[in-house]
Image 1 (cartoon, helix red, strand yellow):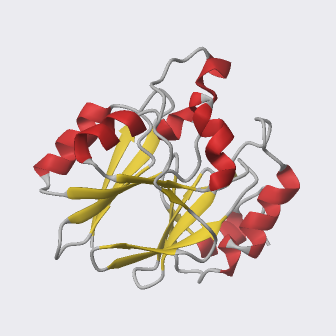
Image 2 (tube, helix red, strand yellow):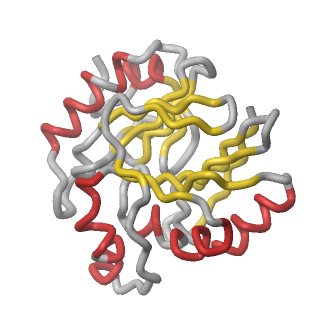
Length: 208
């Protein structure tokens, strides 16, 4: 497995390039800005993008969708509950930001679905609360999950934006993410990686 992290956009979003070492096929997770840097990294590491994956569609996670898709021919995948946010350009106007409109998804994600990227298998977990169609991409064999803005290292996603809901987010964390093995490494949308076990014990918002 190959994993590269690029911190992009005005909110310092983690954009992940996740790839199969054998095939060099890649998923671009949450391209929130700086498309030229993302494309350069794909080229530098000899990776071919099969998917662009949005954990959710706030502007800081999809601002570079259009450029990456146009340059790579990758398929866009996201949860259908995110379509209104996607079509509103991620709510960029709420923050006085301008972003290119994203194409519509090629793949509409559902809970339990498995995406194949070379030999990697990404299971889709529906983890709403920060946004209605928030998803986590879980790689059981590798013991890792990309959870967007649901759960951070000792923090949680905000729920005051349209479609956000605290009770729903709490359910997603406690009943979905906390059901993963404690050693699972979480790669959030912002900030450093953490583990399920650490967050269960030390996250002041949702610790058990």
